[in-house]
Length: 159
Image (cartoon, rainbow, N blue to C red):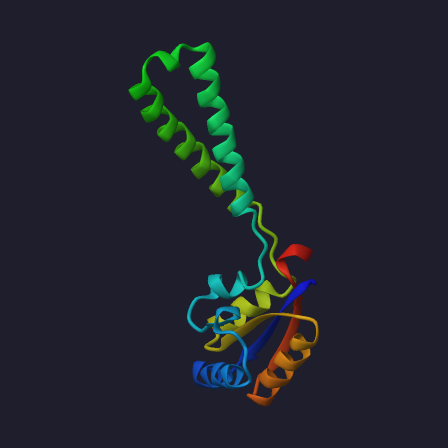
């Protein structure tokens, strides 16, 4: 199933906190509900799709290939301590580079600027990751809690 992110824009953090309580009472898993009230950059990242995991794994694999190559063709295999220390450094370094590159190639949702502006102007954002019918229910709960505006954003896998 394709997930989506339902986002409610609230006038202030008190109204958003009330929406969080309403979502909790409606049975939404707290791990899928998030409130942003004082960080416009974080608000702009709601629903964002990044490639951090892929970058981390890809970087680690490249590091392992480098270590294997030096162990086989570069005589690094003769020194087990050097092999282990070098492997940790190279694999860790390449994994870190992959993580940074994966984070750089993110896709923001179409309303990222709107979310950042709302928070910058003293508002708050409540987002709910959901699938199918529960997205309609989440939108109803946010509307009932007084959301000024409700946006339906594509899930990270759709970006």
